[in-house]
Length: 133
Image 1 (cartoon, one colour):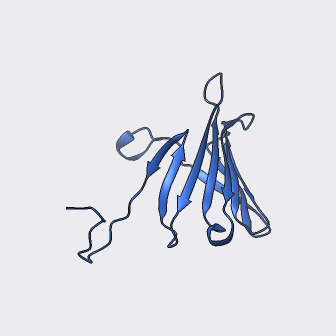
Image 2 (tube, helix red, strand yellow; image 1 turned 135 degrees about the vertical axis):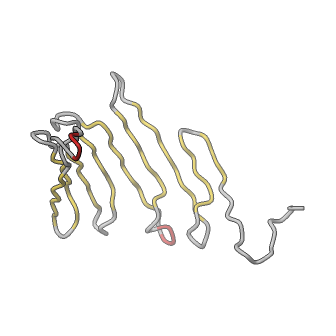
């Protein structure tokens, strides 16, 4: 495609959206004859539980995300995630876990066995973290 001033431009990307029971179930990027798609799955509470990204001819799942949710106060918070990527000969899978405080703020994540503690600073209150100088 020739754009302004004779510049060569890639073809525009159009998206087609497909819904099942009012929820997005598939999204296709239309690039000429190529139509790579993304698929979405949900649980009985309509929470997103999985996403799959396909290659250009939709024969191989390149990336796959599986999400789990907590219970009780964490019922709407993602507490676990499994990511599988297939860009080379051997798929790579990473497990992730998330922990939240009572206000729903992320306080800790564990990604591939490495734990990170996340601290949220009080806003404009002049308060300091315990032990801060």
